[in-house]
Length: 321
Image 1 (cartoon, rainbow, N blue to C red):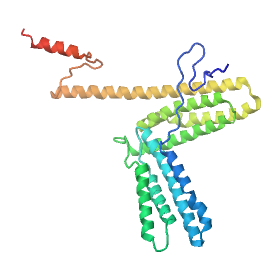
Image 2 (cartoon, one colour):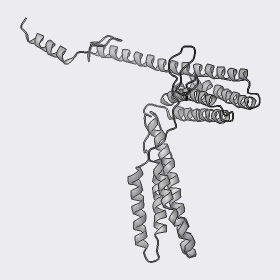
Image 3 (cartoon, rainbow, N blue to C red):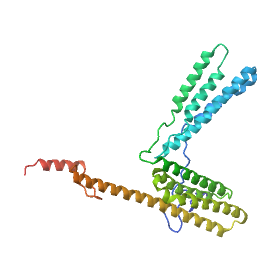
Image 4 (cartoon, helix red, strand yellow):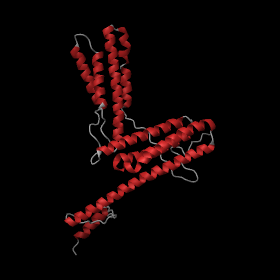
């Protein structure tokens, strides 16, 4: 009888030794829902490529350029969609440096114009090209044109954090590529879980680049050491399949994951403490200015009231005393 795998290092598994808390699922890569359209449009441009070999020299060149224009435009559009998906998935993000969807639409329209070009009918080819570019814009939309969540963030610190996070992502990618050589699904899932924990720290730094000095060692030295350890472990494990070596490597990942998670929590708690201080200072200042009286003490909330409570309270206020 088939039994579902649910070991300790399964992405949706449970811990051992009575630990019933489910492990955190590994996040999937971000994809845009319209990416598949680009493949279909490229496939629909294949007749340009096939019919080119039944044309004269001029028609051959024009049809090949038409297919290249449509295919190249879809490549740019797919990259633009991926950049837009990454932009939407982040709280703090810069607009893409290159408007790939815009250039993809222009290139696709130019390809359609070249494919429909006939000597003496230049206007018709231009209309078809413009119509193709407009349909591309209606189908895929525009590129993000403004930064998101960048108010009050130092651009220099943001660029510095972006470079360090990019290096950290390269280390994580190298770890995942190295562990694939072992062919062990549990080890692959374990490395993926560690990568997810490290990316939580990445997200925190993206939201507040001012914390980069406190975690630079985590994003550089520690991740580089984890990458080197993973490469050496993969090479050794392929030759020996030693259980002790595997246990030592898993223990290393556990320690690193604990440290990364603790650092992320510490940064979050520090940000929460700073917010409480700002709120307290603002309340005291408002009270001194006489603008508003702090009706609610810090750390306490009003008791929630239902509609019946409100009606009873209103009736009691109307009764003469």
